[in-house]
Image (tube, rainbow, N blue to C red; front, side, top):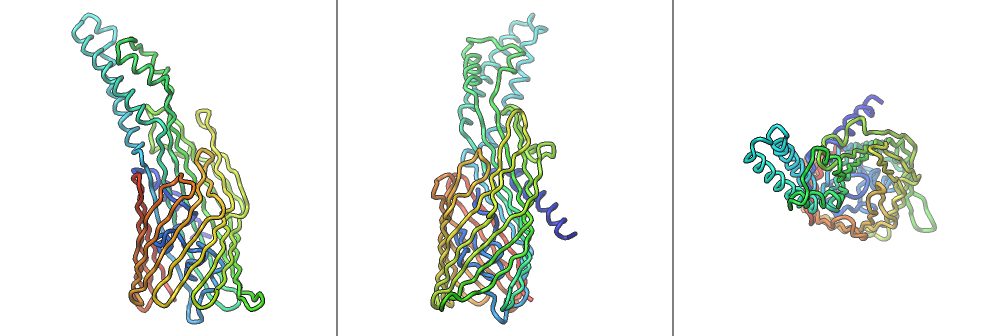
Length: 421
């Protein structure tokens, strides 16, 4: 329990830091696996026995007689998308507002006797107002998204009931703007000289930005068993799990929005519940494997704190994915398609993903991978992925690395370290 507690605390801290501190440029699913992510996010039918608890617990029966205990310690990943470079724009707005405030002091009544200084300050205020209005126009409809994940797995093979201990956490963050047209109209009027600004006018500005984040941590035990249905062997797996959710809701005016405050404790709420993953898999012939995975079979709606009159709801819904894999001694090709949509916060659009991937085993200790991952709802950016797998020391150590890139300033990076005993 001490190790689980340490994993929970360190992971929640790390995920929120990864997602929000370097926010410069998005992800699907509820876990990161460097091999699967390199292969287009597939894995329902193509995962190894060691990573089965992350993608499809039924694949635990893939453990061979010569396999022993397998550890993933850890698997980590991050994907970020900021196609509009929104957070940089908000920083620019803050800089302009600070300048606006400084030059506004030149309009103070104590300076009325110096007409030249007064006119110069007024010209600067008009210029800053025009610049700020232009920046607000550019911010309308902007958003930024990020996700990060971490997992540890201990998988134990046997012929009767293979099982695994799994602890994983997945975080997602979403920032969006709400630009008021009245702000732009006011600033345009000041810039044009049609309105003389007054100190109290700052209370008329209403444009805001909202940042919400969720970190979901699962702690479970996965089991699998193979059954015979006629002549066909079918594997069934389940993962009962404790699920802890941490939600953050931060809302402030665009003019003083601070992204570092999104994960402050004062904006956080926690929730703990029970959930269940399940899966099926079947080998057909010598080369085909088909799988079906269902994550989070128990639906939950969790509300954030209300901040500045705004509240959001994080939605946990069953995610059902069908997969197929063709494999030979040197090559694996995989396809995964979501049968249900991926939901996050209600303020975000739904996504539904499909992915294809391939792995070529160059040597016993070297694998090359590639893939493509697309959102069929067109709410997330499609990405191309690639990666490498290294298994030195007679396959006792496994190092997997992956990266992804897409349009709109989207990128991702994943790494995974595993051991076999």
